Length: 137
Image 1 (cartoon, rainbow, N blue to C red):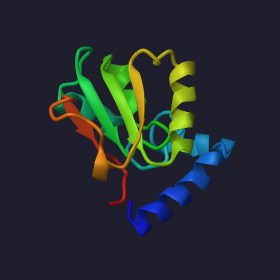
Image 2 (image 1 turned 180 degrees about the vertical axis):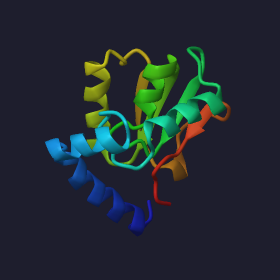
Image 3 (image 1 turned 90 degrees about the vertical axis):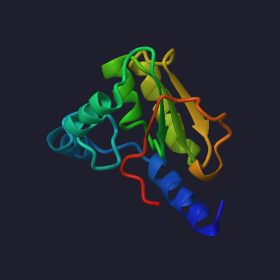
Image 4 (image 1 turned 120 degrees about the vertical axis):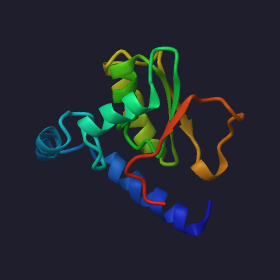
């Protein structure tokens, strides 16, 4: 990882260690349209559009790069039945995603990968679709 990536990962790790406040949950419900612990700006309607455009279905495999706490990857898995791998660098965000997957009954359809998008340990053609929302590159 570059120094800039390390610094970004450190800042997000600090942010993910703190549970979202009730006011954040209310704002998310009003703006994004759901309570998925989002830390970006993609709305539920936009996530639904992604699912439709990508043709997500139960047999599809989705990679969510820069997944953070799980938005929109877990939502897409819940809404379409697809398999999802949530990839990000800060393990704290992935821990939150793992908790959400357990609570939502999605552990059988969700995997976690602590890795930078710059160096993914994945074979070519592993996924049917990739999402990369609300990530600063």
